[in-house]
Length: 401
Image 1 (cartoon, helix red, strand yellow):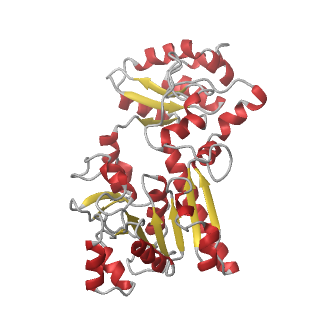
Image 2 (cartoon, helix red, strand yellow; image 1 turned 135 degrees about the vertical axis):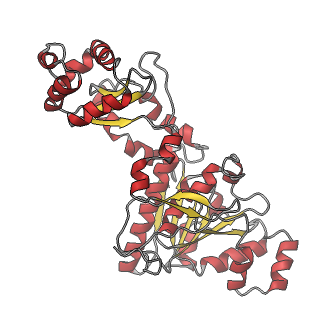
Image 3 (tube, one colour; image 1 turned 90 degrees about the horizontal axis):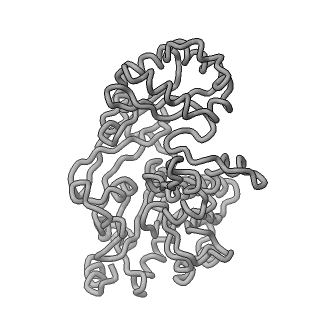
């Protein structure tokens, strides 16, 4: 395996300029940086990306920001000022990709629509990320992650079955979905440019990204059929599949997928082989319909066992299972440790742990550089563009950078 830091990375030599904030665009561009791209993050002077101020959980830094902004350079520009806009224009002349998730229409008003940029920089790839996409009656609506979870139907299938109470995802899944499609969209646009020689536009909608992920419940409810019922942490249509308490107060997550596993579960886990042919539970749809009765049997069986003893039985029967970890448990996860998936990155708060990107490639090591302070790279980027120290200081005095 070649893990040398000197091995070439797929996006070495690619420059990405990003007018980004919050999660979707920063998550996209951080992953481009993981593959070696140079990402220049353009931020407002003084305040920067507003995600910098979401919280102070990571040594005074914001948790969202640390997660999505390593390996980038921070350049401050007040794009309302002409001289700052001229700097951006010069920067785009050197760039391969522009990623932006400004408010709807903001980029176009600054002359940064794909059409305008394509005339000036025909090789430039432009990735626009928005809540609802260009056109349509929702184009101008504000779109935060939770709002898209609601519009995209996600909240209709989450939550507790008993109380019929919806629940949002515990992470920003709509932003993450959009960031992933933006990331793969940019990669595909780079491949296309390699064939055609010209740049193209990637238009990513948070709504469309999340709705794509909702394909199963949507087809389950095809042509007005009843949607999957809310089932809390359990599976809505397969049973037993979900969390079950053990006698020591712990919880075990388990899942059965077929009748062979059901028989093994009855025989080796519940130690009740006769249950396999019980008419109430002899097929998955029956087990799902009678889940309250079956749950009572399972809970009673587990009541004399610790969570680890239950997992030992499940492993012996080759039944899929998992610990129900909290965040502390994930930080200490033995599998991540055994596979050496943690490293450290620099930040304004000092060294911080960082998970290596999923999808390890044996030919190169991912780029794992520091989380930038606001405007940390302004002087060096401006110097590259040919501005001397006196001009840079003048721009700073004018508030342009």
